[in-house]
Image (cartoon, rainbow, N blue to C red):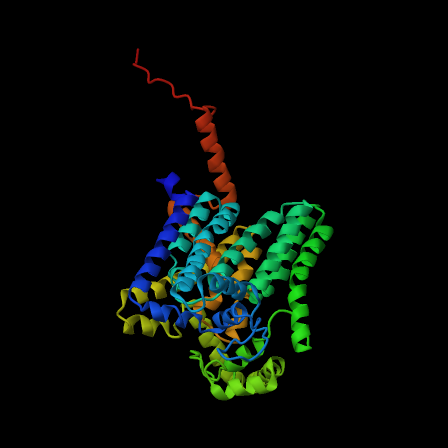
Length: 454
């Protein structure tokens, strides 16, 4: 049973089966005509449609508004390629896009497993991967909307695994690949930038502690990550005549979450994609000027309404970690759906599990406490200040499962009442013992025969 439970291929297949099964049921109950259109009618799909029809990277609001830097280019270009192959606003295009999302989500088990194995052994690795396989947010987000969410989760888990690997390597090739991975991450989801200096700095510090060649390697990785962003930044300057390094949307996100009409649960109010007046102002001013105005208004409101901001930030904090509910206790008892309660409890328990996992790694003096802790402690702050939805948290969700697995491992140690040791050391000790038994070299203790009394 242990051998099957820790088999990565089985975990990936189960994760894939869950996602395909839920997606099939979703498609079966909805009109194919609706699915061929509605999921594409958001910013990523609109930009992809603009690219696929030859109008360039622009028009995020279903009308021709010219060039945009609304989001970094990787996922809209992937969607545009799907539209080129299967047609714009067609059911086969939807199936192809969902198929990619499902594949990315299931494959996130792989880097998550190997990161967990490096941190806490095979048991922690398998537990983290199984949690991800049945994580309801990962299942639902793979087919309900067409955003870069599933790809970002795969990249977020891969970045952690690569960070742990490169921290033990002096090879220039490994650090170059690490830099290119960060370049892909930033061109897919710019929010991951908040983790780059912390994770890359930790890896460089580990090489310094081990007397490795850290300066040249870290400089090469950072340079390659930056170089991957340069073409996009040059393109933005060419079309906007102003410096937009990654994306321009932060001003609007800050404003819709921080203004006199702002609410914890945002339903699209005051957004150009829904609000005609805001869209006309966006077209009239141009994207950079519009975003700058919104950013200025939002900062002014934040500074002049501290009590209201405290309420908004607190509500978004709860909503982000409860899986989308701003009042989880009330909603749990008010909603009789068992599936809703499962999703809510899963999110709350893994949020608590992640916190306890950080504490456990710190108490064990694990060197991996810092790179895992920065995911839940640093990354969400951008969404506490703007908007909070489950898909915004998804790039760090694999690490949340990993930290929860560490907590479960420590709980089993406590229940067995064995001395607490470092998780990786105990895993390696068990592995050495198993190899000795398999090779026949393990010592068999001598037991004298009981005397017959003669």
